[in-house]
Amino acid sequence: MATPKRRAVTIQVNGAEWLDLDARAREASLTIPAYVRTACGWAAWLTRGTEMAGRTSSARRPTLALERRSITIAVTGEEHEQLAGDARQARTTPAQHIRTRCGLLVRETSLPGTDERGDEEDDAWERLKHLGLEPKDYFAE
Image 1 (cartoon, rainbow, N blue to C red):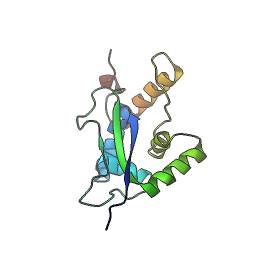
Image 2: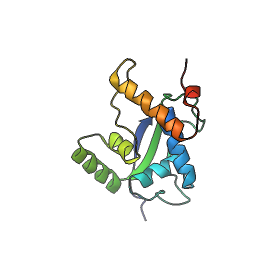
Image 3: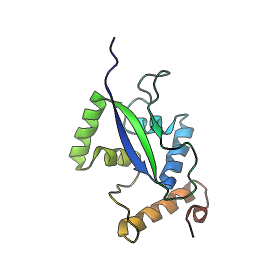
């Protein structure tokens, strides 16, 4: 039997979001990519035991709140079509739609000195506090 075609979808997260997703994934006994798949309403694994659901850009814990990370999930063709349709309906990109399904803010750009950067910093601070971490330890002086 042929293996269904797989596609990769990558979302960008900051260090605080990565730590938050990591905590939720660990609580569910999943990897971060598998947790992201479940947040989208799909099975955690494409084929349990033979193929992981994706990868993260680093297994190393972030040391800065705004440190950039990538999370890639594998999806089937059918899942990709569903994701694209849901994203179109929400008037966003598939990656941004996945971010919202994971409880993350939509973030188009986050250039220093912009309102969006300030919103990202505030969100990161609150996420770290919620995780029981000291936020100031994750922001460069």
